[in-house]
Image (spheres, rainbow, N blue to C red):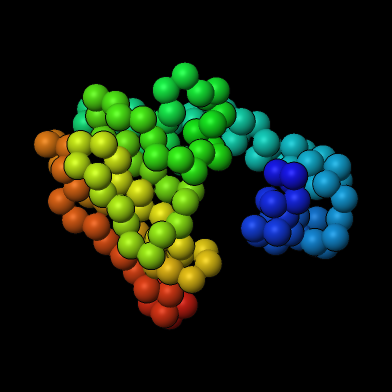
Length: 139
């Protein structure tokens, strides 16, 4: 099911970029992905980045969940002793829950904008930046 979802969420474009054909079998794609070194590179990236005042992850940390849940979580993350900066669940506007989390996935790949949060030492986002789809297409 994850593979089907990944292919429909843009994975076919990724497969085409490696193989020249979006209909290529997943096995051939994986072979090319590994041969060029990208598999090793991505496999060695951290699932989260912890800074002094925040933790950045794709889907958010849920207490007692498997570490890979950070990639697919769509639930509200657990309250930690640091602000969680997350994405993965697109919303029209960034969502900020004070001293808990900020979701900066504003649907850039689908219908929205590209957003970022500037986090200061006090754990509060100072600025949330968004770039409209029109501005992205012009640059």
